[in-house]
Length: 159
Image (tube, rainbow, N blue to C red; front, side):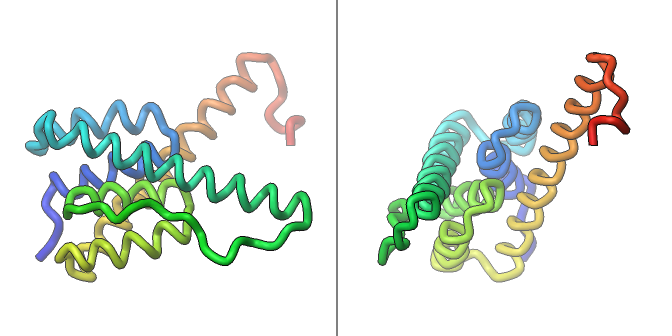
């Protein structure tokens, strides 16, 4: 069974927040509404995505400090509590992809399967998050090019 549009939008909302892409979230929250997600479904989705994004950032900065100071990595990685629902796992999975956080990605793939998603549905959610992540990068690169042009800089000279 394929993911329905509501589920795809949950993964996309997670990825939008995971990547920190304002234009993406401005698109995917209304798209979630259009797909049938209600405010009581959207609000926790945003909270789960935010929590996942924050943990991913903590893991990244913790590892950066370890590398900077020559410390060894901790024996265990403090991951978030397991989401308790299928929608939460879809959002957390999207946010994990968006944030490029491999430990959380591993956790949420397992969690999604535990919540009853099929391997095909997990792949579909990851694909949706990948599309959002790439779109976020494209938007940012386009804005950077526009800012360079507006500043009167020769784009070829900037490289």
